[in-house]
Image (cartoon, rainbow, N blue to C red; front, top):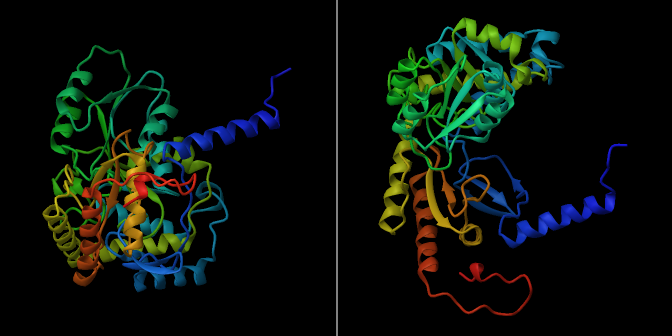
Length: 415
């Protein structure tokens, strides 16, 4: 008989694991919010500034996206009712993929239900036991999981280190195929991949290159198509991946590339084949978002103005935001407990900035991930800076002696 884990042992395991997470400052719970993700929303009954959203351009609350979604509901209903290969390819999907291919400068595009599914499905479809994948050490979990599911050999190269990447590419290998995986804008540090060098190495060593543009789409490039566009590399990058759920304010992921690539994924990407398609309303909203991004570059300029204003103020207070080169401003505090105490402090000051802890980031690098929006006003940026100024004073204040008031007291929360 197969051994089983009885319910008592299972419960003990769960309790012990959760207790250890609490002691390490890594326990998580959902924070209930009220209202739409605009510059302000309500947390625990109190209106606060939102500075931890990926709604970079403010499109999640844009009236034209809402209108497009409403019209799609009237025309097509609320759900896709099945996978596109079984239940059919409704008109909104075709329109969005045509718009995407034009936007990204590729022959074709394919929409997935999420960015995670786009990466996992594509990488696992392209890689196999006889292949080698080269992955940046700080790549998103979806890129890592795609490599694991592919059963290919995965070689991790040092973060943004093209010399280490080339050393690994040059190793003797009987691999059938080579695939390089990198983000363009890294989601937790905000730094940029050296895409020109990586593209050169991909061609030199005959490797396919997948660039994850999740946090670059809508933000970088003359038309907002991403860092690949900004660097003029559309014809050199084999696979462009991205999402609608960040700067585009909607939901879903996509792959853009050659017609043969998209046709191959229709046959082999399990996360596309075996899942229900996005609701038509979401697809229509994404199409509207793409059109706005292309037609209104002033949104990107407003975002970059806010980023510059906020970053300048934070650096004047003595905060070190390196290595960011983007709209993502990481304020590293190191310890998880200290980071979450800072999160709570800011929330009391009326600013919601979420703390990011392991396993999302490496041990010892917990941080506040600050992300302004194009729709934040100058007054709101000034309010946020005032709160961070108070935080800097609290962080630098001498530590108080622990007060034994209750077993839940944390010295890290003394400020």
